[in-house]
Image (cartoon, rainbow, N blue to C red; front, top):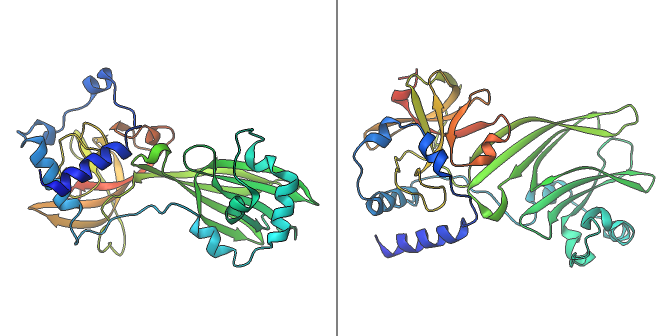
Length: 317
């Protein structure tokens, strides 16, 4: 293996070391698709070819952005730092959960604190989207009722979008790349309604799963095309490449994201001809049962999955 690829592989193995390994029972229960039955090249050769493809300059890839949440920073142009520091001086427990191990100063967490009127009552509510004592960020929404503050929403990671209707928050989107910098990312979409006393209620409306650095299509169809799987099983992969060696970040089933059964449905949004094979970039329906995945968070709730499928496995072939 080339030195640059060896270094990349070692780095990825270290970065994703906390991802759980599949059990022997799970290995035994895994379906065998035609790609897994084929005679394989040595794993080191496959992995090097995969790296050559994945890290080529021509390949556009999705990137999850860490650090201070860029969406809220752009949304809130100016901050009343005096008011925010006063809030922290009197209500830090709503941010720190009164944890004795909390070691951040109020000045340190000020960049993660935002004032936004959530329910249209003219009072600035508080959104905290920032650091915790553990891995990753956290999002907290704290309502302001005449300086009486109450936390109404909390979830891991970062706000990526907020939509308002009639002066009130209507839609909220959260991106969660998981703990320990693992490869799986979940995008949560919430619908927000309000009670008779003008307090928000958050309902998880949709979940989309994908990997941190999957291949993006260079151009999409004008209109997505519905399709279904016509083979007994079909794999969704992170790019237009069959890696059936152990992946340094995903697990022992290569770059497979999910396996679906016959008649599983989805929407094709783009296509690509790569190395003699036609591929489709798809979003699989959340109603489908995922037979197998290397990413357990995709099974926690009905989840749509982004990825690439061989066109010959679908009704669009």
